[in-house]
Length: 289
Image 1 (tube, rainbow, N blue to C red):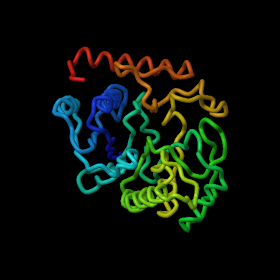
Image 2: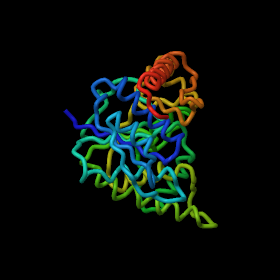
Image 3: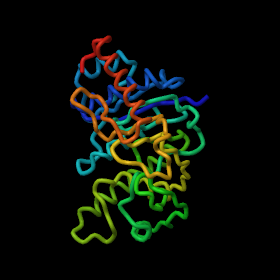
Image 4: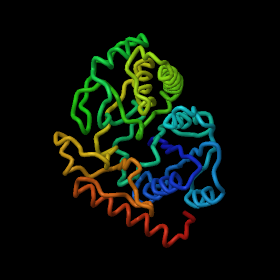
């Protein structure tokens, strides 16, 4: 049996805490065999006492981490990689805070390969990817996948919001991923860009480069393991029949912290179940939100 550690990164502010609360509650309520897994929430530069108190009641460890780089807030998730010496685990499940758990997904956990879902859409053509990899002296990966929404061929370019990382590859990932984030941020500051760049997706572009540089193969996850609720999914994936394990709502929540509906009735049934659990927990436990 794998020893699972679940981790996320949040800013020290109310909207982020609400999302962390939703993630933790849904794991505890709907995660099945994973419901009692240890959870680490990495707060950037501090955490209010009321947040720590609520998370402590839920059996969550709070960890204060430094900001990675002001130019790239998404890169704060790299702080989740600095765990190997402090915690006993074989698999790290690294999640964005705007994800929630809908069901037990132990069948997708493996200690052999890093696992992630292909992106919803790619900002680059294959030719542009070729230029990016060539600039860094890396061979372009031969594998091709289809993006979840736009359904176009893409290299191994993954959404970094749900990553299943075996501890045995953590050191390699932690060596290359931060390096390519820094290199891409430096490129963004150049007036004349020698290769295509995209400021919003720096961490994901860097991840693709790191996987190739570190010779790390990836097992693609199905759409159900990182189900986007903010966009339509390509018909080839049969989205109306998917019952998600992990929903990625991309910050689409109400003022009360409840998830907005998506485009698909079956997934909306899952969203309704999740919202009900969140409301019940708030009402019955008296948590400070």
